[in-house]
Structures are given as structure tokens and as C-alpha cells.
Length: 495
Image (cartoon, one colour):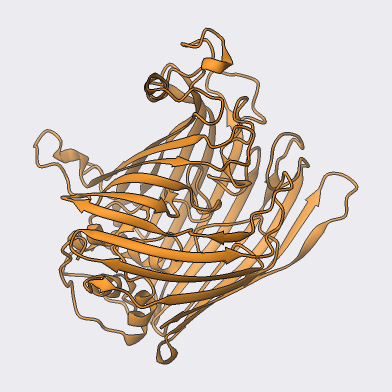
């Protein structure tokens, strides 16, 4: 087994056993809001002393930090996931067929199909020290992106090779990531864009330091990856270097903090020497800092920031937020953009419920009072495709200069039929200019509502996920309103 997982407690529901058999791997991908909801419940009720804001999560890291005395409810997605991971060797082959319309403005935490027709096949293998996953899928009927490019064809999204050494895992592959506490978006790393091919290093179990001087930091994890972006962009094949540390300081109960940094550097025609990487790491990449005002010597583009989630005094609600900066001043992020949220949860008779309200402001705020507050977020003068991959922001789906409010809920039931929904309203690309991937250069009013559902059929080794909604995009010009139904369906079967 990848992390010597103990069998935590008996399985209570055959239905849940099938639902999580679709995972059966040492890592939990950011594709299931219902499983994420249950993990948060375990944390909020004091049964899980681990950080959970960085996905993919290590199942071993969760199992090692689970308490034996847990709050009782009728669904056990986490425990059955752990039980499935005890099985070494090859997993059953999993096939999936997905269908979706071409309205792809919004991609929040989840695993919706990325094309009108999105079939795929997955198998995985694992032993005590190594794990591998092969995922083959193809995209057909993908809508052209904001620069007219199309992303159809065969891909290996979701594939990886991983090795464990002590409490660390090294991995190479194309995996989805999600950094931060947001439910509808993340400013720095989300599942909005397709996964980036990368090598990574991750701390598996968020054990506290044993030193009395550092133990106050509490459970902590570290994550870093170096990926390479696509060829079809203004500067082809640049590198993306990301780092994140997350911890739950013991002096403040219920608080979880994440610090993150992203560096975009190199690429065809750009410097990629060792000194370039050092300059980027030290933040010496502003024009004039160490470049002699020569853009050819500028290391690259950087973003940095922090996020938090705080559940005060064991109450059934939490505040969360995220701030990121596109520039640097006196070693601090500047050109700031923000995400705020509040969530609450409860245990019902036959289900558990979570409700959240979230607001994202992707205009730029300079604490040095710079008047340039538009067309900065996710943009860069050298890397003119910006902080995007294959036409979509790597961070928040709303892209630069947008302000969006989201209200959502998740209902996880004991019978294996789960429901969720999100209402969104706001302004996309509010100044109507600049490089926005979601509004084609126009200021656009957004209104959308979506209801999604997950249902398992254990007798048939089948899982069905559906969504149905309405999306309206109205530009501030004479173009007709773009509105209509949104829908998706994915069917997964084990063989």
C-alpha cells in the first residue's frame, strides 16, 4: 500500500463502497464536491486533524490523521476510499462517456466533461512504494477558445507515475490541482484549465513538527511542481513553477492558512539558465530590478499570495478568503485581487447539507495607490497569453477584471443520490477591453444557475452524473444576448 494505511473502521454502506471504488488510488483528485464536503465535515467536527485545502489530497495523509471516534452519519465516502486503497496491484478498468453543451464559461470544483463528446478509459496500479495511473480520453466538439484555437483530440489528462520516499511523494504526469478554500473558484490554481504536464514533490501526511519551537505550526504540508505550458501561445512552451505550504496553527483552533507562489519563466526565445531560475526564485524579475530595463533579461511573470479558512469557536460556519498579487513591491505581492466566502453545514436526518456564499473580485488593487487597476490580473507584457493554459485561466474561471457572486449548496444523502446547485451573478471583464478568455473583449453581465446530481447503481457497477442549468451572457453593446440551457451527462462503469 502506498502509505501503509490502517483500516480505520468497518464499512457501513455497500452503496458508498461502489461510489469510492471509482477512485481506488493513493490520491483524491479535485473532481468530486460531495467527497470534498464529507472531508470538510470530518475536519469541522474534529475527527480529522489534517490540512485539506490542497488537491489532490493524499489518502494516506487523511487516514493517518483520522480519529477513531467520529461523528456518525449515513454516508462514508472517506472511509470506503481508504478501504479500497488497501488493495494493491491493478485496479479494475474504468470507462467513462461524457456529453456536454458548448457553454463552458464556468468550471468550478468538479469533474464535468470538457467537450460535447468526452469518452475515456482509466486503469491504475499500486504497491508499497510506487503508483501509476493511465488515463486515455479524447475530446470532440470543443468550442474554440478566445483566440480561435481548438483543443480537440486524444490526451492523457489524469495520468501519472508516483514514488514514495518516507513522507514524501515524487510524481510526474498530468493531474488536476486545486489550491485554496473556495468552492466555486480559486484565484491561483483550479480545475478550470486542463491539467498541466509537470513533475512534482508533495508531503503526504501533514504531521506537526516534533520540535517544541516549531510544534505550534500544527499540521503542515508542502507542495511544489514544475510544469510546461503548450506550444501554441505567444511565447511557446514556457515553464510554470508553483509552490504551496499549508498549515493549521495550534494557537488558533479551526484556522487553516495557505501560502503560495507561481513563477512563469523561460520558453522559446526566453532565458532559461540556472541564474534565471535563481533570479525568479529571489523575486528579481521586475524591470529595472536586475534587468537593466531590458525585457530580454527579465526572468518572467510571478503571482503570490495567501488563503485562509477559519471556523471560530467550534461553531457550524466558517469564513474563508484568498488574496493573490500580480506584482511585487518591497518583497510583498501587489496588484491584489481577492476571493471571500462564508459557509455553513448541518447534519440532517438522512443527509448532510453545506451552503456557501462566495465573492470574487479579479480587478487589481494596488496598496501603493497605482491607478492602473484594469487589465493586470492574469496578464503580462512578455507572456501575452498570460496566466492561462490552452485558452483558459489556470486560476479563477471568471478571468481578469471580473466580479462574481456565487451562492451554492451540497446535499449528501445516505441513499447514494446526491444533489448540488450554484447560482452565479456578476460582471465579466467590466471595462470591456483587455485579454479576457470568457467575454471576447466585451463587458458582459453574467447570470447562471446550475443543478447537478450524482447517483450510483451498485448492482450494475455504474455511476451517473448529470447537470442542468441556465446561462445568460449580455454584453454592453448591441450584440444579442447569448443565453440558453446548459447540460452535461457522464456515465462511468467498472469492468
